[in-house]
Structure formats: structure tokens, C-alpha cells
Image (cartoon, rainbow, N blue to C red; front, side, top):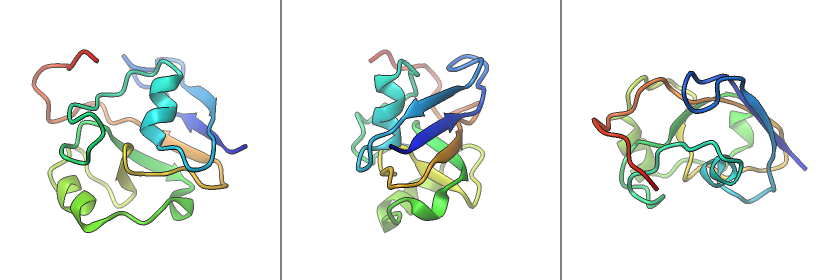
Length: 112
């Protein structure tokens, strides 16, 4: 089973993590199931950018981003070439290394 290595994030995952990630599951779902409370203000419907992650390794193994996702990513804080919305990026058969950006465009943290 592929793994997701989550790089340390000051508030969401201070020590980083290594998570088992079933193929076909979104990065966002894997994080949430492992108590890494990434924001997802639109309830994972590809309507915001609060679940933005940067895929440091394994980007090419993910499903291709849709035009809608790419349009939304243009509004994400800290956008990089390897940015994805974690609610739309599906784990394939390769391990991933991801970084959760320090900020989102949300002014207030959502409680889910």
C-alpha cells in the first residue's frame, strides 16, 4: 500500500507523519482519517482552495488535475507548480511526500 509522508506543519502536524494511503482515496480523506485536520471549507467539492497541498514527491502518479481545479489553484496562497487540491488528488500506486502550506485564503479556521 502506498504511503503519504506529510512534512512537518507547525499547527496541523508538528512532527510530520507517515500514513498508509489506499489507492483511489483522496489525499484529503487520508489526512482527515489520520487526524490531520486539513481545512476543507467546501466539504471537498472542489469549490475552494483551503485543502491546498504541495506534492514534493510523486506528483506524476496522481490523477490529472481538472480545469476547474487548476482555475481554483490560481487563487491559492503559496501556489507552486506541484500544487494540488488534496480533495481532488487521488492516491495511485506510488508513495507521496506532501507539504501543507502555512496559510490558506480562509480568514477563520473552519471546524468540521
